Length: 468
Image (cartoon, rainbow, N blue to C red; front, side):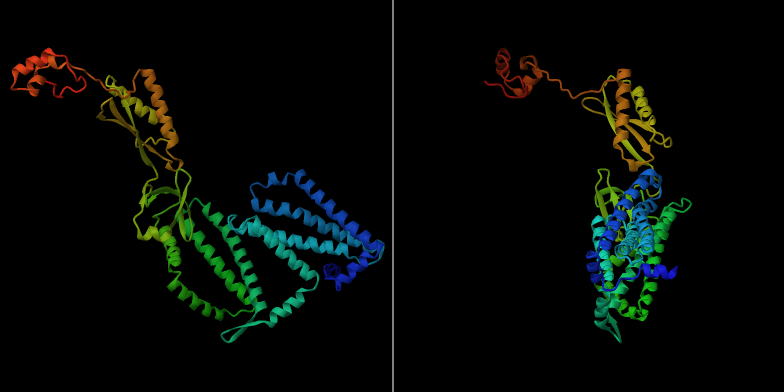
């Protein structure tokens, strides 16, 4: 059985000659037709299986499992049908196969590619690994498959091994560098995948403090990446002592240009360890107010109520003053001001304001809402209602609107009026105001008598001088 499968997936020598012979043979065309029928029928069958068993709906809670199973149904069916067809072809036709074996090669390679793509999707966030990168990487892997199938990979490997790169007392071939980079990349991706799965479990552990969960998640992620690199390098024949050269270069880089990045990374652990900044906190930095939605190794994401986001470097929270409105308590105070007419029953109006605030489900019962008289304005009396909210991250616009609408309805029921701006203008005849006449011309009583007998020429300004 082992020999059978080894021969089944062994590369065909002189593939070009075998393809030319197949095109010149009726049985070769028949085998090609069988391969095409198997490919199309398995594709149709995979779609039916996915729709019949509702795999997309049943595996909603397991996105990684759903993603990989749906993508593997067709290649697995294709591989199984190809193996069965190869066995039947050899039994009935008593000759070797070409197209069916190439179909089995393709199905096996497709399974490997789709597994790799699924792991990358789960290990790397979507904003870093999108569809464009997935298609590009898939094309590269298919090119590698064609090179392997055509036996050109042996020539390329020999060429890469002949090109060496001297580093200290050791010579590294270009093949070692490339394979080392690929191996380290795969190891890092696996480490990121494992760390991401571990991070999800840690962040869901409600028994731990939020900041402690983030610290543990970041430490585990860094530990996984370091261990992956240390394991991957010896696997490709790279001595770990050579890392001292890169370590020295990294130290120089940190001293010259990367110290800001290192400062942000260390500051990220500091703000998480001292609980000064936590996810969900309301912060005010450089006249920007927002809620902490994400804490990364380099920056903190603040999201304002209008949806705009600010990326604040971590060292800003260590070196600058930060206003944290929810440092000791997450509840926040808010207030509204309304104006009522002067003939209003103020105790009743104040009670309505408190009841309107207490009626909202988001309002805290302790401290209780309260209302006050704040001043006597030109058109009415200013009233002020203060309340506390337990979820300020959901915004104040909706609750303010609900409170004002409740106040409006209650005031209409009680007959309380909202004043509107108004001014009273009085027009006086200067002749009927002896005090104004004495102020205008106190030393000339004759002129006053003459002026009082004449009609006023300026009714809008009582203090203007009359014409003589």
